[in-house]
Image 1: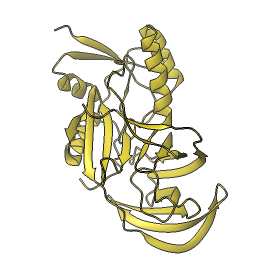
Image 2: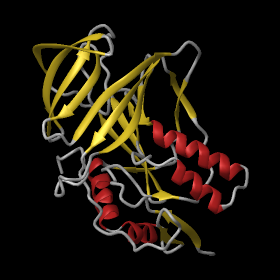
Image 3: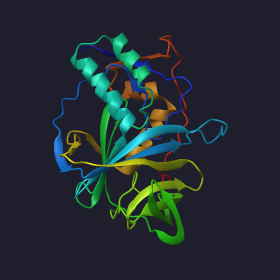
Length: 290
């Protein structure tokens, strides 16, 4: 079988977060049939700040624009930056653009470090995380866990909403959150749910992960929550964590091995020059249970 050759765009000087992958400049078109799980009533946009390198604290946190889309029965949390990047690359692919054009557009739409899509209450009572690690599509389905929140007396105004403070310990980290009963949905960024109102700000006490809501939009026309995970490889949370560890230790080696030698990868810097294969990329998982 002919070996597939990928070019790996290494964004020099940019950190990579715990659910990230390096950007593969040549991608396969999305051919998996999308299922409509629900129709979103509103979306909340968040700025995610992540401290990737916990050794070199002089480095600035990596930021990512995230989106939470909430429907009557389920929600999805994903990277808006990655959504834009993928849309541009898929359009390039469909129009037969050259690899050089695709790489130039990927450089233009930098970011997109968060590659997962997290579905809450799908299937009912569970959370499902979809992620692409290297060239592998993975699906991690778990029983939903609601943090054991402690409600606190402090209040603060965020985006014009009166918010109340709460704290919890969840997945190995201590969190402080601000939620507004004025939007009575027990939703929030990532897996942070279960408060009597939408979470508009949340951060762990080590200042590694911070979510700040930057805007809320109510949909006036049907906006489907789409799911393309039926054919993804099912893995447990422990297996997924081990895959992340292996990938960040040696991304190129992982991609090559996972493909059975059918994929080779060349690494390029921002200016198209050949770069050394990355190893031991800083890895700071949001879930510390393992």
